[in-house]
Length: 114
Image 1 (cartoon, rainbow, N blue to C red):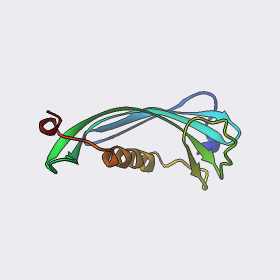
Image 2 (tube, rainbow, N blue to C red; image 1 turned 90 degrees about the vertical axis):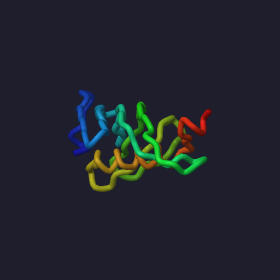
Image 3 (tube, rainbow, N blue to C red; image 1 turned 180 degrees about the vertical axis):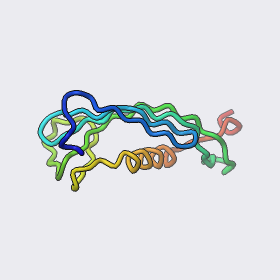
């Protein structure tokens, strides 16, 4: 799939429960494909102060590169690079990775913020 991505953006959209992951893939240079997307959702998260569950509103702009094969960093790329070794980008897996990154951040419920 990655080899089919060109300079013309290839749009995608995933919806699951309260999560929307919408964006595009676009050829950048060499083996790099740019992924730009918006992640909008509401996630259940435990407060890092009181441990009570609360709904965390998520509205994130996401941008990173996907490398078709091993990426050798020359310092010229400012975004993160995800390597793919089978020529495919599993958008569903990327979505779940982004959600886990958000959940791993420090978050406090409204009661503890006040």
